[in-house]
Amino acid sequence: MTFEEQLEEYQRIIGDVSFPTVKKWKEAHPAGKVVGMFPVYTPYELAHAAGMLPVGLYGAGGMVEIDHADSRIQSFVCSIARSTLELGLRELTKDFDVLWFTSICDVARNLSGVWETNFPKQAVRYIHYPQNMGSPAARTHYRAELRELVTMLEDAGGRKITDDAIRKSIALYNEQRRLCAEVYEIKRNAPWILSTYEAYVLIRVGTLMPVEDHIPILRSAIASIGERKRPPRDFVRVILEGSFCEQPPLELLKVLEESGCAIADDDLLLHTRWFTGEVPEDGDPLGALASAYIDTTRYSSVRHYGPRSRKAEFLKKIREQNVDGVIFAAPKFCEPALLDYVLFKDELEKAGIAYLGFEYEEKMGVFESIRTQAETFVESVMFFS
Image (cartoon, rainbow, N blue to C red):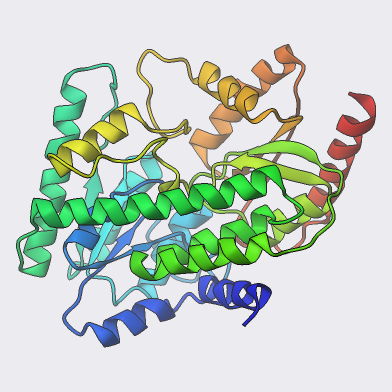
């Protein structure tokens, strides 16, 4: 099977809301437990150390109509929350034993409560991340939170999770992060060899399978990418910002790249690139994960930085990537992304950096307006900067 054929197969898996990889894993592990994890970042290592399958929950991607969820959650919240709940109400997540929701916004907080009410047989946990990173108590708080997550998994799985098991899981996920970083380095430096769309498919499929299966996929893909013979082309280098939780339609990524945008960096699928360095594989594993979250986490709109300026962190990212402009792609009703857009666009105007902003949702099917905007943006950068 060629690399392109493999990408088509991975895209099919991503688009199948019946979670075929989860069903396959369940068949091979009849007593095994599955942990569904809401974006942006969740400690996959803990579920893996428990012998469970951690699975990313990124909504339905526009593959289902919202027929039931609107009776239980507001219709004016983001698509990912509504469609994730719709998957549950259609019993498409019945193979999930545990669900973790994260403290990224009020909608995620409320969704955890709605889920717990509607699916009492599934164990649900809302993860409280530290908010005041400058406080000495932040590290202690998050380690205690991780300890409670471990206890929850032990209760669900009926087995003890050892520190050694967590260390081994950390080592595996460090390897996955290294390979994902290599994929991003290729598409950053040679976007004509590997597009953001292709890189996204490679990484996203890993949220639906054991990490042991994803690592060889990444290694094989990196080797195949190196054999591609594609001529360079002119691009406008941009950063894609605002898509940290609800993921944009794959077609939207294609449209941006076809319009002449080389996406040097983005905030898609942050769970694989959440840490700027490796998590230590020795010592206290929960302490290592807690310290990594406090000290070596990359910039995100849904992570608090204490006294550090959000604007300064954003501008630093732009300078480091040496880009020509920024594309703000925010999901409809996403308060963190839309609030940051107001904050950041003023800074970009002061700095004379070009930017384009628009909203999207899972059910988008027509992209011509965005294509026109992107093409106009590219032309303005290329010919009038």
